[in-house]
Image (spheres, rainbow, N blue to C red):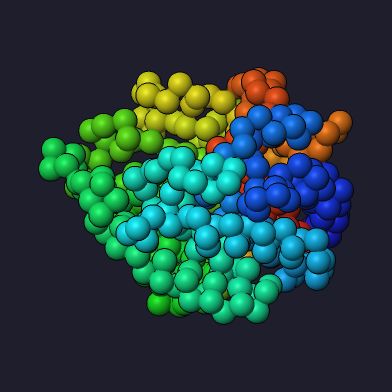
Length: 378
């Protein structure tokens, strides 16, 4: 299959299966915001609004409005989500709640910066769609606070503990890089292109999920040995987009090596698909879900391969894409109700029939379909 046919396939799937599902079932037309806990047929089974997923859906719908079609239904839903978040998401100290009740009252708080990161992302894209610059101003101020929280987790009630070795989290690099790209801030992008170096393991050609800064202690704990193929795929295409803004041939080679290493290391050679988590030394995993096959890992693999091909024009990425695309579309999409199942066992059978929860929402699949199509058409 040539690149143009992949692009056509992904656009068709996005607009015939994925987006219709979320527009039919997730928009709360009474209180604003989005339901994400949806059964297979879209029935809501938990009315709480999960903040990071609401921010992500604001971004998704705004992105479609900005780059595909000025569809007023998409913009109206994005507006309802953005207004709901702006009114309810922040506590007295300017921090982001993790979840809200249907009406917008605080339901849970998470001592991490990622809810705020995706509110920032959603507001930035919505500001472009709506022309309301107040959302962009709020987003930029929130980005500055978020970086302070990453530098000092104690500000979120998560103090650093002296007994554990200092560690760089790939998730922190990811969110800062993603937002730097959203804002068009090349200084932030360049900073994250440098920050990724400590995560790279050149012998195995892999990015560590948690890069212990002391080399002597790098593999002392399971957390330091942790490899998440999905994270490697996701950070790889973001880094490639960053390198379009801040070119560096040596860094590009490193990123493509890490992507290929992640594909080879993460692929289940017996049943197909990518493992969720792996230990770089092959030792036991603390995460019981490690052998499972998850929706976002495979969506990000497709997106990474599309970007790797357009960045290099090397056929190896299309060969990998053919394998990954076939396995993914054979197992995740739901032909009856639309969208994707999220959680499969190692053999590829769904373990849950839900289409959304507090982690799966309207983001990884539509983003991968849209950006992959755009890359293949470029």
